[in-house]
Image (cartoon, rainbow, N blue to C red; front, top):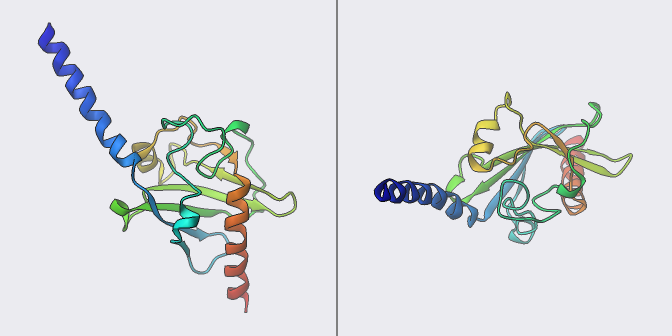
Length: 166
């Protein structure tokens, strides 16, 4: 009996180690595609990347009310208006330089100065990869984005669409 307990404990400990190692990885790049963008926006400035820690919120060891790019404390919300351009926000790490490490959807409503983030649902392309990285338990839902995310990404999207309109 003692041997079974020891083996079970060792296997359980081994399954936790990769998640802890991955949690220490820093985001090295964020890309924004879709919506009304003809070309992707790439963010590689570490001062910006450090503000959006993927490892905060549900499914992580963090208990922060606001983290990643989401206002977790406000809970899930209704889907924002379909008239808003939808963007794919992809997060990369050193080990995932070629393929996104985590992907969410984002849209912004300038009329109410409010952004929204959606985590891929079960039938969405990025669901398997995202839940393999972090299972938040909120997949398929929309949330209010953090103001710091909106004020960081909004001007980048505006500049990119203005350049493309010229």
